[in-house]
Each structure stands twice: as structure tokens, then as C-alpha cells.
Image (cartoon, rainbow over all chains, first blue to last red; front, side, top):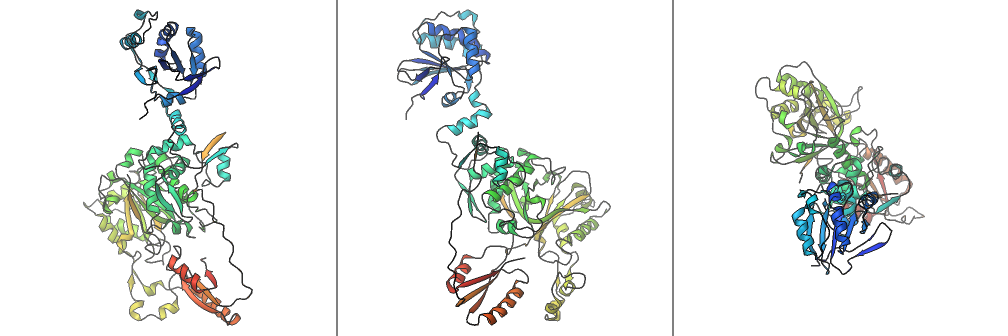
Amino acid sequence: MDTSLPTFSLRNSKEEVIDFPSGNSTLLCFVKEDCETCQTIMPVLEALYIAGCNILVIGQTIEGNQNLINKFELTLPVLDDSSLKTSFSYNIEIVPTIIHASDENQEKIRLEGFVKTEWQKLISGFGTKPSVNWNSLPAWRPGCGSLSVQPENEGRLTAEAENNPIRARKLDLQEDEFEFMFDQGFTDGLPVIPPTEERVLRMLSGTHRDPQETIATVPPNMGVATTEKVAINAVMAGCKPEYLSVVIAALEAACTDDFNIHGVMATTMGASPVMVVNGPIRDYIGLNSNLSALGQGNRANATIGRALRLIIRNIGGAVPGKTERPTLGNPMKYTMCFAEREERSPWSPLHVERGFKETDSVVTLFGMTSGPTLIVDQTSTDPGQLARSMAMCLAHVHHPKAYSLSDTLLVVCPEHIDTLMRGGSYSKETLRQEIFNYAPKSIKDLVQNENSGVGISSEQLAAMPDEAQNRIINKFRSPEDIHIVVAGSDAGKFSGAFHGWVTGPMGTISVSRKID
Amino acid sequence: MVTILDPTNEHQPVKRDLATRHSNIVGHMALLDISKPKGSIFLDKLETLLAIELPDVTITRYSKPTFAKPAPEALREKIKSKNDFVIEALAD
């Protein structure tokens, strides 16, 4: 393995190019002007230089370098590393850092900050006798953080370094980047964060996935969504790096045959993914399950849902007016993601119901066409009464005469939980059965009539035997089509419900994915 | 100047030439029902009219399992291999 120090060519204050290595033993000292310890050691470095030591001071700002030269009347070479590339290539985390490079360009010693005894030892081994008043110097002083490791610089420097994981096409923009992204159709109609290389690299730090790993093939154009492309869209949506694993899991769920994101986005009914997150990651990334959980005002909720939508648009090509054909559409097509308020629920959380461990972090996607429609019931006091009251509202999903077609996602608010638990234990399954058993109808109840053309035609009904005409069907095909979670603030007796699309293998089936 | 990364899949659409247009409508014609409500009523009427206008054309009816998903590859291949023309009754 080559252990040679990185080569560089930097300019001194006279604009002369200084090359390293030179073939001679050299001291390299990385500094920045506003570091007090760096200022402390400047007279020592100047004395070393005057004593004949090969020394290069590498400063991190142009103005700071000049200030140091003026203040300490330096004659030694102070090199301009305002690009920070050399500091980065030497892995400088602290300034001052002094490195003794051998004449064979190997690192012999590296010291960070200032410890007088270490510096004395270093200088004595270098074979020069500089005129230094050691008694005037402190015994020890810590250094400062290098500019090359500050977050706003590190991403750029990583991008510029070798082994850059970025493979996406780079678009050099002369015009306003926000207008450009609108013009190119990259946005959902709202401004997006420009996905610069630095931002995307920072975003990629939020996952262990390889940047070029294929996360999913995204319909309708069957675009390949690599981790990098997902990260680009997550940046645009406004995500933090720690949200990325949720976005990845959601995309994996969306692009299954069960979920059928192609149909969900394309349908004239205007369906959209609704994301529910369970498990410890909720707290870790600050997802809201409490007040306004389904509304605006929380970055994680807003941007995770938006990221999935932008991925489907930009990588999959689902664009309204092209393959996306909603008659009305709905605001959920911008974003809809929230966490279950597991701590306020007396029941098993959604992900445990679906076979995951309580300690797992899981995202579940539902293909929903509308919601949340409010269930306003401030006066039911009996658990069964409230359950049937909710069922009464849910009997209108899609249309009062539309039966056994769709699922629903019921979001029960905490005050309704309290009412349900008033008599002691009231299980989620009891609530589900109460809703399922509410308002069954016979086939002949659902015949088309003068009030509504929804239902079966009178001709179809007439062709049926009596037994079939009188067959009883429920609003929902099975209790499993009634999904129940808990969310919302402690005040208010207002639960909510999302209405599904075509539920089942012919349309969409909700899908859960563990977040890794 | 700002440099951003392309958020799309970067694939250019495949350029396809239109199929050769026949001067006469003869041979086999597929009528594809995507399984939307009342699509079959439209195709029934269309088939009746085509049978009058194009008595020498053999019409075959096909249907997708669900309107909510793309047609299965096997169905697409079957329609392609056995027909010279296809009319798809799209939704809405």
C-alpha cells in the first residue's frame, strides 16, 4: 500500500506555486487565522524557518493568511488552501496540525493542538536550533476544528475527492436553479431544495445502502431508483439524512405488485400512498403522531411523504396529465405521512398486528383516494355507541351504495380511545367487528334506483335467483379491510378515516416494510 | 453557477416508428376490454358496427384481468401474434 503523503501545489502570498514534496524533510503545519492556538505557535514556526527548517504553513482562508503574515511579520511560506482540498486530503480535523514529512515523503510524526513538550521533542529531532522563548508559551492548548470538517464544507470536499459515489448526471445551471427545476417539471408545483452534490452526499450518509444499489424499479416508466437517485429526490423534498431509510422502505413497499403504485397514481379516482410509521424511529427522527399529526407543521411528516411522491414523479415518470389521470386529485398527492401514537393506544400498534416486533421500525403504505374525512362525535358516551357511530360514518366510504369494494384506514383520536375504554377493556378487534357488522345490505337493497345509479342494474337483479337477491353483504369485504391506528392530540373527539381505492389483487393491497 | 444532480432516471424514451399503416382493413382485429364498468357495452356496440362495415375482418375479444394494472405480458404477446389491428377501450 502506498503510504506516501498526498502531493499538492499551492500558491504562497506572492502567488508563487509551491510544490510538495520537494525531496527534503519538511514540516507541514495546517492553520487558520481565527484559531488562538494557531496564533500562539506562529512565532515558533517563524523561528524554525529562520533556523533553516523546511516548513510550509498551510492556511485555510486567503484573508486569514494575510492577517497572520502581517501580524507576525512572517517570512515563511504561507500557502493558500482556501479550497480546503489539501486539508481534506490530509484528513485534518484540528488546527494547528503539524506533520513531519520525511525526505521520502512519509509521515513521521503528526501533532494536533499544542503540547509544549511534544513540540520541543519534534523540533529537537528535526536537527535545528530555533530561537524560541519556550517559557513564554503555555504548557498545553487545544486546537480548533478545521474548516475542512465543517458540515457545509465536508460534503463538497468528499464529492470532489476520489471515489466519489455520485454517478448522476450533473446539470450546470446559469439561470435561477429554482425556476429551472420548475421548468423541467422536477417539482410537485412547490419549490424544491436544489440537489447539489454536497447535499446529496450528506443525504447518503443517512443509509448504509450502496449509492448505486437498486432500491426499486418504479412504474410507469420502470425507472431504476438507485439509492443515489432516491437521495437526490429526498434532498429536493427537504428531508434530513436520518429520514432517508424511511423513504427507502416506503419506496420498496410502493413498488411491489401488491401495492401497485402504477395503478394508485394513474387512476382517475385520484388515489395516493398514505404512509404510517411505527416503532422507535418515530422518536429518533421526530415524526409527529400527536397534535396535527395528519396536518402540516412537521418537517419529517411533510418531507418523507413528499420525497416518495417526487421519486414516483421524477424516476417513475408519473406526471399529472400524462400517465397520472386523476379527475380531481387530492392534497395527499403532495404528501401524507404520519406516525402512530403507540404510547396513547391501549392496543397493539399497527406493525405488531402485521407481524413485526414492537422494537422494529416499520412503514406501512395504504392506497387511499380521500381523507382524512372527519368523524365528528362529541357526545357518544358508551363504547358500543361510539363504535357504531364511527361505523355509520364509514358506511359512506365512496358512496352509501358502494359495498365490498374498498378498505379504510381509521385513525382513532385519544379522546375517542378514552370513551371506548370507559367500560374497562375494549379491544381493537371488537371495534373492527362492530364496524364490519354495521349496516349489512342485501343485493336487492343495492339496485339502481331513481335516487342513484350506483349499484347493480334492475336487469341484473332480475336475472338472479331469489337466494342471490337476498344475499347479505357487508360494507367491507372482511374485517381485515378495516385498518385501525391511533393518532392525534389529547383534546378533541374527532377521529378520521381515509377511504381506499380498489382493494385487493385487482387494485391495491397495503404493504409494510421494515426500516433498516 | 450552480450544479445540481439530475433527479430523473436519465433514460431517453425509446424511439419507435409507427407500425405500417394498411391501405385496406383486412385480416384479424382485437378488441381489448380493460375491465372498466360498461367498457363491454361500448365494445359490443363497436363490434356490431364493425361486423357490418368490415364483414371480412375476423374480430376477437380480449380483456385485461384488471383495469388497475398494465396488461400482462402474455396477453400482449397473444394479441400481437394473432392480430393485425387492435382497438383498446380505455377507461373513462
